[in-house]
Amino acid sequence: QELIVRHRAGQVSFAGVSTFNLDEYVGLPLGHEQSYRSFMHRHLFELADFELSRCHLPDGNAADIPTACCAYEQQIAAAGGIDLQLLGVGSDGHIAFNEPGSSLASRTRIKALTERTRHDNARFFSSLEEVPKLSMTMGVGTILEARRIVLLATGSNKAATVKALVEGPVSAQVPASALQLHPRVDVLLDRAAAADLLRADYYHEVEQIQRGLELQQQIEPVH
Image 1 (cartoon, rainbow, N blue to C red):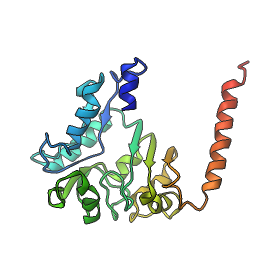
Image 2 (cartoon, one colour):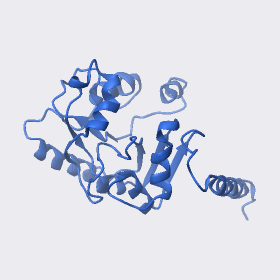
Image 3 (spheres, rainbow, N blue to C red):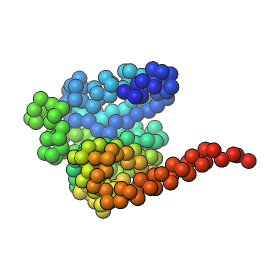
Image 4 (cartoon, one colour):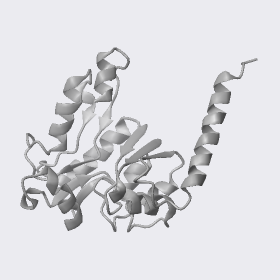
């Protein structure tokens, strides 16, 4: 919503932007309100100056999903890779639809959803039975190739997951923990989501120091 507000105020244009969605349900009709393709068009693409030919979304209704997955990887490569990857995180540590146990080197592929993920997402559907069991998703390896990553998490129900992804060991059982291997990741949290972090005070101190350094660089005269 903020992006649309800024666009309408003339503060930002998306005319030259290319987008790649992380994932999509397999078999969900394109017009279904919970289709991510439908969501992106309704809430973003059609409300700003995006060039639709630059807006790429996984095709969960492709006749040949494995071939469509390979084609998606090729589209990302042809665009020069991803500059900025925006992520959320599931209550079990999944990113995109890379469920626990996903290979940290995985590429875009078809992936079965766990019952936990289906239960978590059931609130968006009329019933659990309506939640698809399969998805098409970028792989963990695909995500890690982005030049910069921003992950957002809010709420106390994400606190344990946030602790695992930030302070726990890197493990396929917590796919989000693979972000520890990336050189440029920002994790944005509210206090509830950060509540279980053992070193929260230290992270806050580092953040303040970093902001001070950035401010100093902005005000120092150039000789």
